[in-house]
Image (cartoon, rainbow, N blue to C red; front, side, top):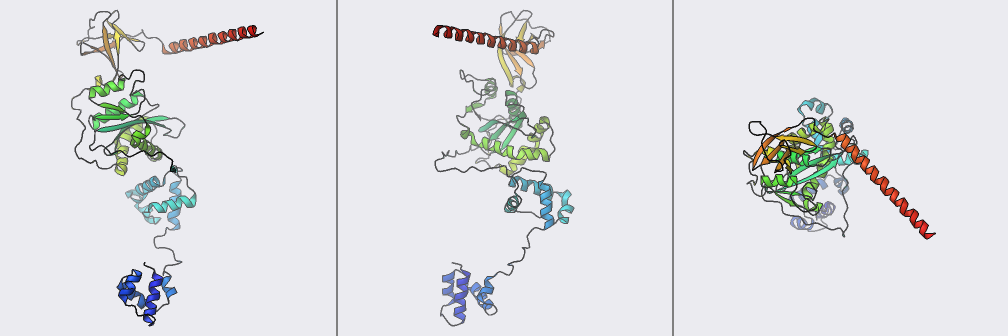
Length: 430
């Protein structure tokens, strides 16, 4: 169907009296409309079939083909981003050049235009530009994981994960602690730290509940920050979530929380170039940039609407986070109404800042805020401030040196023991 050469042959034979087909019959044979066939018959009065089949623009450049100026400009712009995906390069080029009000004169002078993905793809092939994303090719034996239906409302299930990466391309790794919403695929917030740690997740949790509210569930891996591997009891992060009314669900495999894993890959591929693009120099600047701007920027590209409009997030209202986002443990009251905490001594203070009288040997709960490092004591469901006693702290350097010396001594003892056993075995054998 729609074979133009065949249609022209039938129309020409009709004009020359070599067949008695009507236009309706030729329509059914070729798929062309009657109007189009009449147009072809008029062209046959002026040209032969071969001339009609050759397009009028054959051999001529397209009106939409790029000029040498435009190609040169794109090549120079690409030099700023040596390793970048085609889609991100297209985004940055359009946002920073084509649609940038400050670049109107440059766009006009270089005859720059909005271009399709395939246009930039052809440039990547022609100039051998590096594409960082390598798509996997799966064979038939590869195990597939069935897709899970997303949550119907925002706030029902929040996926969290930590991803280490060399974000500043300086050889120093740092970890992004990321939270996404399962219902919409939104990147809600994140926090960068030198390593994946409790403090990073607490920063992330504080932004999450402050900005959006308290979610129903948090979906995480089995990192010891979330799950105690020995007895399954709540960790410090688990206690924080319990106090907020958040249920923790632990995934057994990375594939089970594939959405956040995919987000990790997307951010790793894009953020490196955007750090360079926005001239971000430190982790502190990056944390502000990521939560104030970048999450919304990515969500406009990748997030989608939830099935239901209602939200499951519970407003934080007047909940005091200072006694929730804490490391907590039990200590015994010492002489002088003091406790020992992290190689320091703290006195418990009453409401009027006088020393709180508590019997020696009494067990109390100690809460140290992960973010502010403020230490409080909980006694009979009441929180009391503390005061650090200066001059009663063991030097951490000396403490570490003692540990190293003890380790070396242990290694020496074990080495001497092995030598004695080896000498005894040789003596027996001889």
